[in-house]
Image (cartoon, rainbow, N blue to C red; front, side, top):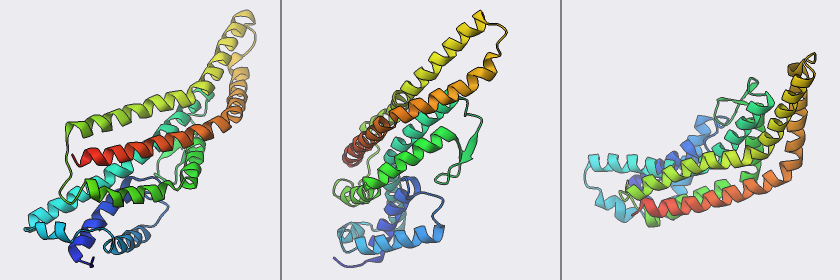
Length: 255
């Protein structure tokens, strides 16, 4: 296999789509010049691994080549998006915890996306990122992108109903997972709210708001400490499941 400019550009675009949406790879903490250099270096190396010479010869017009570049970006973005959904589910679970504990008004800037998220959302996302990196999730995404050329060749992307159904199911699954992850802590804090309600009825002189807020925070942090080993295991299993979704998605995109 030899180096060709057209093959390099096609690989560069599919890698660019992955670097736009994938966790860690899309981090705003990474300078743009470093991202471009990394993508170019990976594309140059993959030119000698991925067979694109025959596909490049089939592209006869400049309009077809531009369409191929756009589709390559879409394929790479879709692969990274599935991994980002798993991280988004964990972050959403942290935000649900924050709403119950009273931390929803305290926001910090997420260095990965540049947006503001509550404290517990930032904590759960950081833990999930560490697990993701320990599982070499970013390596798996790069491997999935290279293997995707077997199922989704150049100009082989298919926007089928099965693809839309799978993407919709994955997005809905994100909300279900977020509710399941946040459920233990939310139930514990809601129990405190019910108890504070009974106390407010029986002892009207007590300022339940001032007493209940620190109790909710302490109970929420205690429940999180107890559930942390379970959450670490759940996050690992969640990434494994979403890696399987990536394999399924690549097959569906090529149908």
